[in-house]
Image (cartoon, rainbow over all chains, first blue to last red; front, top):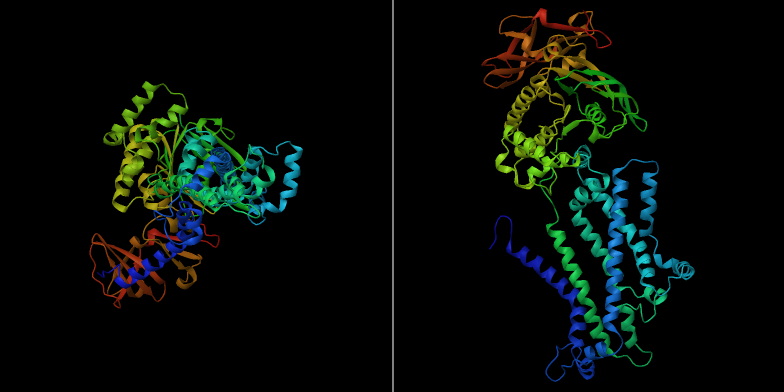
Length: 279
Length: 332
């Protein structure tokens, strides 16, 4: 049915494009999850078919849970991701508030300096970071990873959040000041709730690279105690023999926590806007 | 209690001077309106009084005490903002209570003050609602209520009616006027709307480009403006300004208000053609293109039928004609 605001061909066209994109985006994920439930012969025999009664096999999952301490790796990944995320959001929001709210000498310069990190990949500094961590005795600790990831996430967080903080009504902050609220209360109680959608966006952008990172865990914390999931999955990747069942199972499992976190944040994206404060 | 004195206050943002030396005395219980075009510094001046901006130099005294270094919460002021600025996460009641709680007021006292304020502003049915569940007019009443419960020495209003629609604006204006009469508190009100200024003020302060142009009661400003700017700013429709040389006058500019002109179809001082006519019922605004005076506005009380293109003669009331010198000041 065509109406004034919708026409049938356009609706079909839009949906066709979106569905195609969804299929392309989800295909690798589905392939991984599907094959993780198959036997080795099933994976190589017909990689594109869903598991049948003949090829269905949980060997991948039993290997993952049997070999190595995967539960512990998950815990490490989660600790690192959540802690880094917390610090990125906290310090990022605080810096953004200061940059957007207070007039001080060098404000613009400071903003540029803090945003510079977006353009320079932190990996360039790997050698220096490693030396720093060795000198401070933080090698093979989760603290090392949390510190590096916090530094990695801050520039983008500050850049995005300071733009949003500028949009928060000055009147609201001033009303707080007249009512005798401290700057911290104004920041935590008045401003942060209003920029919640932006915080959620930053959280999603920050979280995924941290969860998926292989580089820094490999260099800074490769010990059994501090291994993350991505590093743990390398266990099954051999020079000559690769245990595909186990790798696919580990990857499928690794999707879950990040998916849960994403669902939590995306809910904030949708209902975060608090209207009624101004206008 | 509630007098304000401003001594030579200047404010600059970097190289831009927004306030260029303001001196002002506000007496206890007065309703003072700051009026001026956008960017004239009226809001900045209010913020300096509130303590939300530091002045570059000069002193602000509330009740004789220098408050130049006192934080806003300790100045004994309350402010109502254009955008209401209610706390979105708090109910109406808690919005009003927050400032008092911060100041350590006993709970019973807070309760008592909220009761009085909510009765005064008829907010009783909404006390448990959040700002998002209120209409614009109700929100502004809550914002006023939040100011009232503080029982301040000084009420500051920053264009409180600008976000309301026309009908609501008139009602709220009335409420603010009644509030002032009842509380007998000192109020400072910023607006760019000269109608609000004329209707509310005991004393109007006309600002332009960071300077005070004139201070006076509404009728003083209307009847004896000090200069061209004030004459043009106060009164609606705006005063007609005519080049003195065209009329053979010595003064640089001649000013005459639209309501001080009479028109006649046969004879008069200035012959002109009707360009446009606005029929408002109670009065009629005619735009005349005159040979001698140029484009002028004439306000006629009651209905007056004039078609565009018709020829009319306008005559100014000689007693109510203003003459301005080369510096813009009124010539006596």
